[in-house]
Every structure is written in C-alpha cells, then in structure tokens.
Length: 96
Image 1 (cartoon, rainbow, N blue to C red):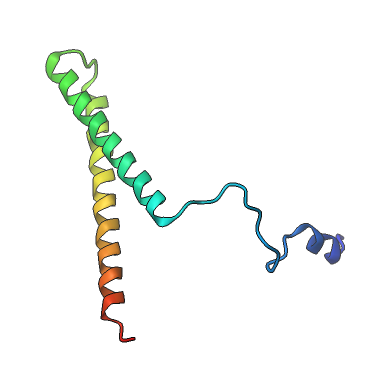
Image 2: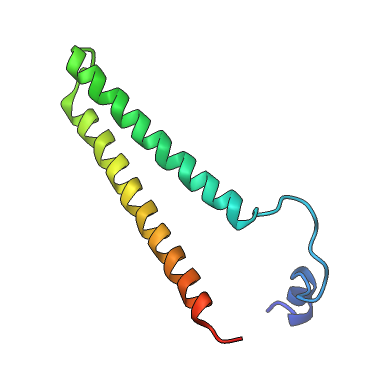
C-alpha cells in the first residue's frame, strides 16, 4: 500500500500560489475563439458549396458534412449568446 503522506506530497496545495505559466485566458479570449471557429466553419462551408457548384468538389457527402458542421457550430454559438444574455439580464435584475 502507498503511504497517504506520499500521495499528499505530490498534490499541489490549494492555498499555494499558482504558477504564472500558461493561463486559460479570460472570457473575452474564449468568446473571440468561439467566434473565430464559428466563422471559419461558415467560410469553409461556403467554400465547399462554391466548389460543388463549379464542379470542383469531388464528393457531395463532404460538402454536406461541412454544411452540417457549420450549422451545428452556429447553433451552439447562438445558444451561448442566449445564455450570456440571460445571465446578464439576471445580474441586472439583482437588487444591490
């Protein structure tokens, strides 16, 4: 059996200051990444449809998958926006 003190010594202390290495980023950074990835999915889907119309796309299935990825990405982003607006409205309704 492993000694419990040996296990505890390998875990970081919850009161110890965190290293200033790679940070997760703030809310604005996360939001910008979500917007950029949604936009990239939309651009990729548009490009795939244009290639299909011009006859350059080899497979209709790939175009449809690209369109569905863009659709799901947009739906997810709209839901995130709705949740953020709901949270903002809830905070604004709070009495101080």
